[in-house]
Length: 219
Image (cartoon, rainbow, N blue to C red; front, side, top):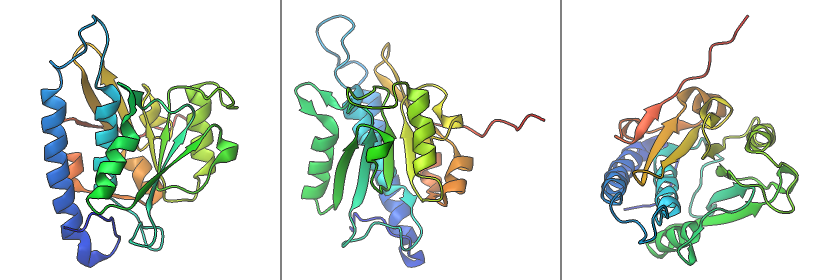
């Protein structure tokens, strides 16, 4: 099965199938991880392993328009704005997830940007809840605003991990509950439509997904 995302209409069935399979695997992983926590009370061992898995699934469930779509010659590029939070249990969980995907034939790269001024074009831009030491945007509100500005007019899937970001510019928002060790994925279809991205219907039907809409414009 081809693991690359494409905007070609003839490949839409493959994209939906990949999303369905990946989504089922992700739901199983999320639902079975709740009891597997660190021995130390209050320490969560799987937050960023789960979030890395969700980002992989998102890469399979979104269609970018031509010519912005990833291909065999154009890798799917994931950017991190702010401090990279994926280092967990002695390994960077996003790097590990992407390395596993690439071993199976994927073509994915990860880039890191301390601030918006360092940004380079991406397909997915993850807005960290943490500020980089040398960053300019010190709060997550500043980073999500900067992310919206630097990607304006581009087909970029902005992903957040902080409450409220799904109505501040993020298309997807990963909210982690440390009490249950489970993640909830907020999706804003309005934001996706503005960015020119097509979301798989199978993504929107996943059990862990909550649909969020833009706030009504107040007059």
